[in-house]
Amino acid sequence: MKTITPICVTGASGFIAAHIVRELLGRGYRVRGTVRKSAEHYPFLTNLPSAKERLELVKADLLTAGAYDRAVEGCDYVMHTASPYKINVKNPLVDLVDPALLGTKNILKSCVQAGCVKRVIFTSSIAAITDEPESHTVFTEKEWNITSSLERQPYQYSKTLAERKAWDFIMQKHPAFDLVSINPVMVIGPSLSRSLNTTNAMIRDIMSGVYPGIMDLNWGFVDVRDVAKAHILAMENDAASGRYLCSAETMHMRDIVALLKSSGFSKYALPKLDLSSKAGSLLMKVLSFTQPRDTGMYIRLNVGRTMRLDNSKIKRELGMSFMPVKESLLETVKDMERWGHLVPKS
Image (cartoon, rainbow, N blue to C red; front, side, top):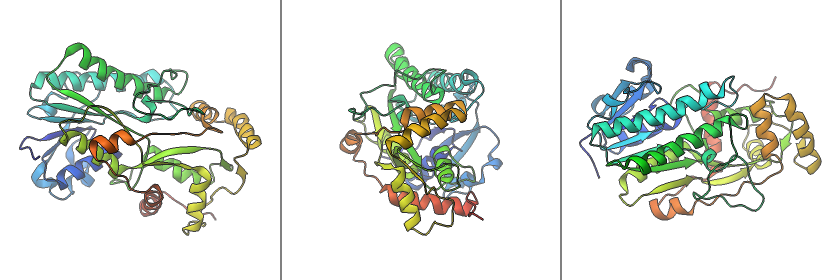
């Protein structure tokens, strides 16, 4: 399927969105991306192969009503990725919730006004499914995060509210377009720009002595290039519907550290002390109260628990296959070295 109309990608300079733009261009599509500044500020986008012929960047602001009208005009498909991703903020309502909700509201209203949009692919998150592992739960697209709030993991709360708002909009307004959401877990992989995304920053912190030891933590991971492909598969498959949990596999912190040590990265300050026992987890929960509020809360809700995820729907319905996490992690580290984000221990 190739359309002569452009595909709109909001927040085109973001970690995931930039890869979506590259993948779309590589598949022969025209792309119209929204950005906050003029195009010359984004050479990593404008210098992509075929960008001169098929990429247009337009300025748009999440919080401004009607800001997306020009961006979605004439587009059959819209990929809405723009949303703030910050963990520790001073004002969760202003810094996270308002931009996420208003951005969702504004883009959907613009899609209605355009009258040409067939489908919106919404970049959500595992955060809208759950904000903590549960011992006997294997999470699927059917679950919703019902525990986050402004006081408890506000980033997860903002992602949940934004996706809820999108689905409520579809249910109440019955627009001419449908909605598909992609819910990725921790997104890693090479970056097209110098900026460091939050998950890659976590890997950097593991390698930079930020963590006092190896904790009993496991995460779901997915490569950013696979997330980009998932968005495009959700666009190209007319039968795609609902939510898609986008996860390659889970990996424990001790296995991440072991992989990095065995792959020649011992020159960095990888944690050596094993705190993954029950006693170690208890200690980490106590120490979490010395951390910034949201970081500490994340530790208390996740240490000592096992995240289990079911990615069968996205494989079955979209034909999605995933890069092995170990391969993606090693590419992530090499890419951070390339950008100068990692400093060997002295």
